[in-house]
Image (cartoon, rainbow, N blue to C red; front, side):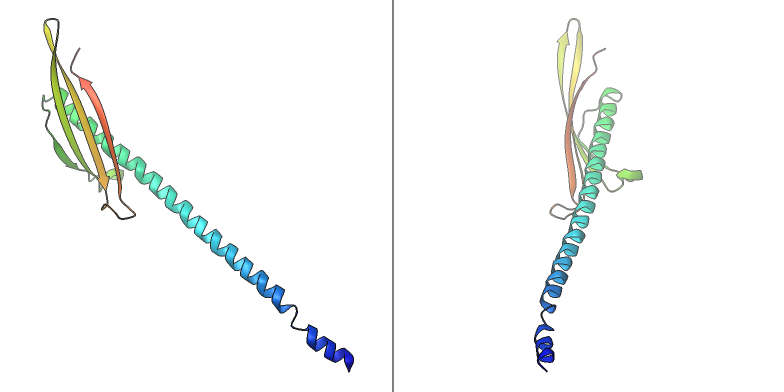
Length: 138
């Protein structure tokens, strides 16, 4: 009879460590899922950043062509619609100065491009601003 009473008292003792182990394992599972989500978001933002740089570089290239080939140094907005840059908007600005170099005059163009996608304040917003200086000197 004494053995049965002792067993009944000790039977609930293994419940506490089992609950502790379950809570710890659940906490580790939550941390692992959260870390995976953060890593995925970091990769997506890195890709978006690279796309924004490529869009801004496209704006610079387009403005350089306009300046050197068409002799046009005007600000403009370009909506990119093709390929990996679809959805980006690029605002370009251009300023020029003319310099005398011997008997020739040389134009120096300072071109700035600002590319963005998404709405400011949202998690998918990304933007890049770059500047380039080119000249028509030969």
